[in-house]
Picture (cartoon, rainbow, N blue to C red):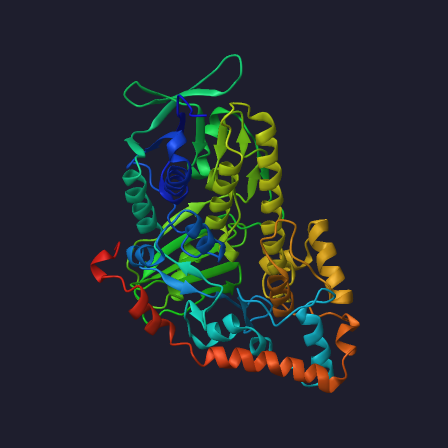
Amino acid sequence: MQRADKTKVIVAGGGTAGWLTAYSLAKRLGKLLDLTLIESDQIGTVGVGEATIPSMKVFHQLVEIDEQAFMRATQATFKLGISLENWANIGDKYIHSFGVLGQSTWMAEFHEFWLEGRAQGFAGPLDDYCLELKAAKREKFATEVNKMPLLYAYHLDATAYAKYLRQQSEALGVRRIEGKIAGVDTDPETGNIAALQLDGDVGLAGDVFIDCTGFRALLIGEYLGVGFEDWSHWLASDRAIAVQSDAAEAPRPYTRSIAHPAGWQWRIPLQNRVGNGMIYCSKYLSDDEAKQTLFDNLPAEPLTDPLMLRFTTGRRYKSWHKNCIAIGLSSGFLEPLESTAIHLITTAIARLMRLFPFSGNTERLAAEFNQLTNLELEAVRDFVIMHYKLTQRDDSDFWNAYRTMDIPESLAHRMAIFQENGYTSSDDAGLFHVTSWVQVMMGQGLYPEQHHGAGQILAPAGLKEQLDIIKRSVDMKFSKLPSHQDFINKYCPAPMAASSN
């Protein structure tokens, strides 16, 4: 049945969250929606979510964003994982890669066979059995080998990405209104938002309102009064400083996360520059000290003035309340250690499209949305906390506090069963799979005391042969990979004139 009237959707706020929401809804539900986005040039965006995880590639395919065009427009490079440096101990380094380790069975995961091979003395390092891990370490890349795709993500210019999405959105009919929100009118009977009042006495009525106003959470927090659950007792960092620097070397196909005495530094290589930043806790480090630490460790000369941010880790008690849905930072914030910010935006958008309130009845849809959102945020929270809890560093009060802190029971159980038995599984939200948990736990020094006996079913020679088969397959594919820089030069070179600097 053809709908007589389109549902009026108002997106409050631009940036990555606002424009990706507007574009995606227009692309997939545009025939049913009247879409308007409000943003003000006077209000800046955070613009530092520049590293992603492989789910972004999948989402781009769902909403038909052309990979090569998007990469050229955003000076993007490819990402195969994260190099975590100085996290377990000063001088230690490992890569959490996106690839799958080896080959698992229904009974046991690959790492449990690998542990048996290691105990027998013939298993090689983990990168022998994971193409993405081996390629990251040696700075090789291709989107596929022998028609088999690699698991990869992107490094991108977040400001350029928002501009690119705006162009795509407006081409699909999204209306942009320049202005600042001065007030919110609510329905006295339902409590739903009825309209937004902009500066200049402009009223904008709608049916569904999407809050992409960042940390301020203007609609869901300030006007609808949805409270915030503070997680800073687990993740204490509350400051960030970001700066762009010149590119002193060819871009590596991974993000670097370098731990310091009271926080950690990111380094994200784009085609034309490097994104740098420092996450830290003001209890242990002053802003001036953080700035000095960051600038002392830049790979090249800075290109911009530093951007200072303050935040509290946690989430809204509800991301969907009444007829308002919070997406992005207005829904919650987890520090960008595992590059999950844009992922959480994309999953919220996909969830909204599946649960869109065309009937006008939102209560049960909102409850489902909130339950799934909370499950996902808790999975990311636990994964990030684990990096801190598994440190052996004792060189500062910052690391001593993390090493000795209490952690969520869900994480404590996961770490204990892995240490005792070698068992782990994907998280309940399906975000971090077994390979991710294994790489970080063992990368941080948590090795199992025992492991599954499946590896003993085969004679040692048989197990060795199976491991060798996997290794030869990885080596064969690896031998066909060009350098990361060479692949970019052929696949998605961005004209230097497109630089946002």
